[in-house]
Length: 419
Ligand code: UD1
Image (tube, rainbow, N blue to C red; front, side):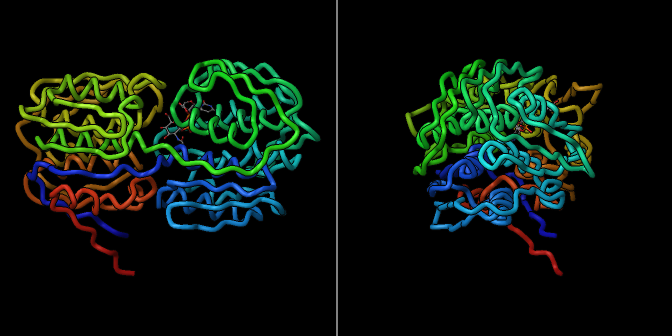
């Protein structure tokens, strides 16, 4: 397994380009299941999760061709309507094939994801929503077996705000008979990006970005071209890395309007931030101040940025409180940060971090995607060498992280694992 070797203590400095958003690309690639025409998706990041999703779509009978940063998908002949356990267990977002496959083909078989490192993460809301639209769903041998001659519109209230749940139901509703209203819908920018792609394919959707989305089903969708939005979590991760190292950074193709909660917290920590329409600049001219935060659905502070801020808080001035309200087990990075000398106490879903003057480099293990990003940031600020093990977690969601960080002056390199 690959490792990242980091010599800490270098303030990041320079410009870096933000890649297309993983969490927008994954549902948009699945939207191709809704039409027999071809969908051309541009600004698709080169990531393990994207690779896994393209592999799944190809297995289902979709023709998939990469053309540089674009992917052309053609689902004229879908002949294997199954998402197998082996794929779903490595990437929960595989559940996103359920809604569109069922809506277009009348059936789908998708493995239940099971537990994952950051919590239980059930898919009951996806299932309930599809049942409300007329699907018959049985759970057999660990698989969701879904069938429906044709889905019909429904009024669906989501008990919890679910990003992929909202996306799955929005895709299914696009081809249902009549109108569907999703209440308490996720408002994440990735939901809006998917809605815009579906609209380009002929779907009739109103309210994406608010908590009530109304979809008027159409008989068929057609092909389209669509460019994926920039990755707000990758952008946020680089901003925190620059702030934590006392550096200066200009992010290109970044959307500050998607990052308001993150930018506000970075300003509170002492950073000077300027936003242009397509770029964000950050400079940290003073010691970092500790910031309290509480994760919650968009537009509040994103759970996917929690580990990175915790890493920064370990060396900030003052004591901070981080509360995680989305996932029940998302403090796996704490034990690793402690091995680097951090002073953190966890009580339930809250962590108290007492800022220290420095961390010391150590060998640490990545446990999930965003926890790993937190450990890389810890390595960048620590004294001496940090080795981050199990880098495959990072490769799921960050395009060439060591390349981009090196470009900013970080001393980081990948050590290829011996077979
Ligand atoms: C998406 C993101 C992930 C992010 C998360 C929260 C993608 C591919 N992934 O994950 O990066 O961390 O949003 O912002 O977009 N829940 C249920 N039942 C359900 C569905 C969800 O109880 O049927 C719960 C989950 O356990 C969790 C909460 O709802 O506690 C939010 O989860 P959800 O928004 O669905 O996360 P994902 O869409 O899986």
